[in-house]
Image (cartoon, rainbow, N blue to C red; front, side, top):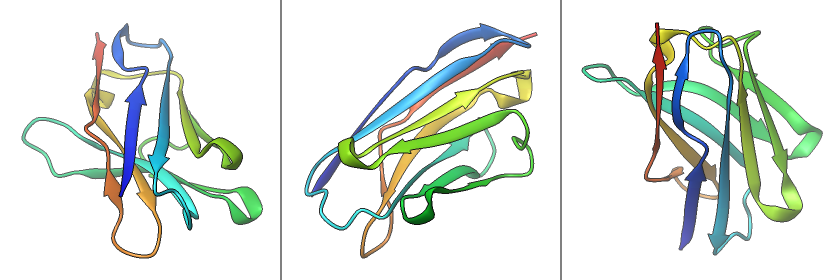
Length: 116
């Protein structure tokens, strides 16, 4: 079983920046991708970004393109999300996900709150 530890959430003013980190441990063999989703109160979980180790490919949701940057450290099974130009609508719980052979495994989430 793989475990995920997320960190870096917090409260920031609009226009500010935060950097989220996620570290996978335990049964990490076969991890080929890690990423982030988010869920705001009363809304469905939304895709944010995903990083694929092979080719170091990065994919983003439309609402964060140009503002967020995902990166990864394959050797450490870590993924990072640099969030710039934050907006109040970015307020949500951000969940890390790891992709192996089955459905993604989710972390507990970290709260990001952007004040106007």
